[in-house]
Length: 63
Image (tube, rainbow, N blue to C red; front, side, top):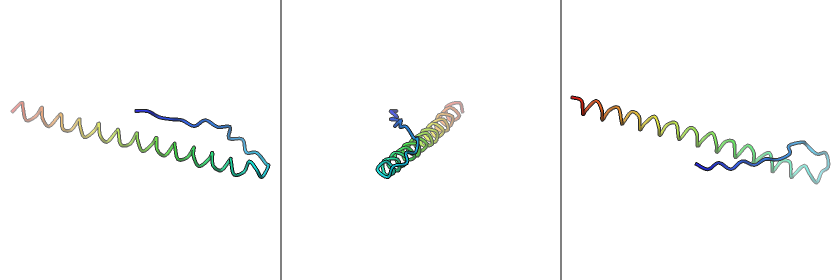
């Protein structure tokens, strides 16, 4: 799994030229965090399902 992090100086600059840049950086940062949490959640669910399948196979083969 590859995770790309965007590091930015999040100090809010007061000039009008930088307001748009700050908003874009903020949106990208939030989006990347959302993607990361979604990926972690999907990975957790996949691992759980595979564990359940593995346990079911072990129970069937023991009987």
